[in-house]
View: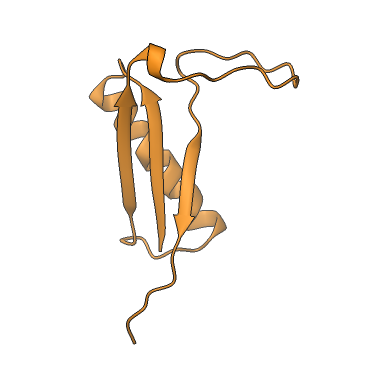
Length: 79
């Protein structure tokens, strides 16, 4: 059961947020074959000054729409 955390620069619309969450969940369904209703996603929005996302020498253009998704995988502890 993956937990996805999204640290985003504030300013996206509700529909943009929903699209990010829905598309990410679709990718998990297809690639990891998680159950459809096994969905744990948390969005944290930050001021632009609170996030530093720089070019790491790979030549990617960064924008305020860039975000580093974080996925955590936990094995259930119940039987």
